[in-house]
Image 1: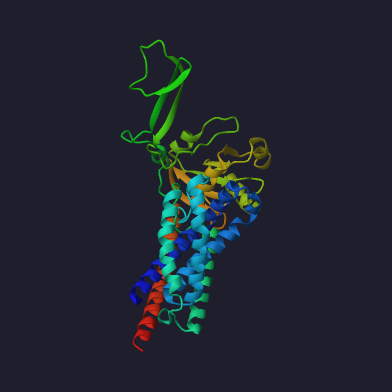
Image 2: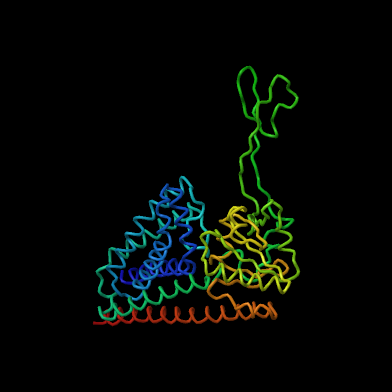
Length: 409
């Protein structure tokens, strides 16, 4: 039984750790998902709390996972895990039935699951958590209080810094379809052999005041006694959907500029500002200054926003402005404003308003500039990954060592 207890505790800890970690990579994305939930359940008044609630949720999941793996405050962690499953399992059942939000966001953008998949996953996890909860008083899986306090405090501080970094300088891992290196043209295209949508087509005919449905194979094409009333199509299976199926950039007059932007062989910079009237003012001013420098250099610079054209023209007069759906802009880049460097329709570089290179750096080779940014991001990811792995190994070692010592006494 002790082995089963340890296995269930490790599985629960790993799942909570992973869930908190992948959401913590992109806490703003989790906040957007919470806003979707608030909107679906007529709780839009909570929108202003979406980001704080997102960070709290990520932190609770991550720290709960670390506590279960290390053996620090196992009783508290077991209660937290049980309460979360008691809350989210019924919630995911409601979501599965009514489907107000298509993806639960349980694992951020790293893993997408349908609402029914999420519900069944929660059912299995709930059963595992019940075992952990029942054996929460087992002293063989706990570490001394002073070590538990130090370890838990360290986990909280490290993860808060991790989330702050991702908020300030863009997620260290970009799971979305606009990541650096993505060809937007390819991501929007549908392969020739891709499966198409399949529909069940029914024809409704009437005879002697009675209506009946027919299929393509048995409808009364040659029987004039039947009168055609209507037809309906029901989607049976969804065909191939390209990663970018809603990317469209238009001018204020409605001219579609998507192919112009993705087909440009020269470098061009997009400043993505979801709502110009509410985007960070200092970031906008920095972007405007960079846009003027691009204009002097003869390089294309576009402002992309969801602000209505008449209002956008007042705020960003003199600049080339394109318009897109706000949800698309949120997916493109999390910073507001954020900056995306394109060439041949490929994403060469992405910067938040806080790590945007100085305008003088854009005067040189912009491909080299983008590569330097990518190298810095990879180095940062390597450092963060190393810290997480070391912390994880220490956690497992501490938990297993304490358990082994107590089992021999």
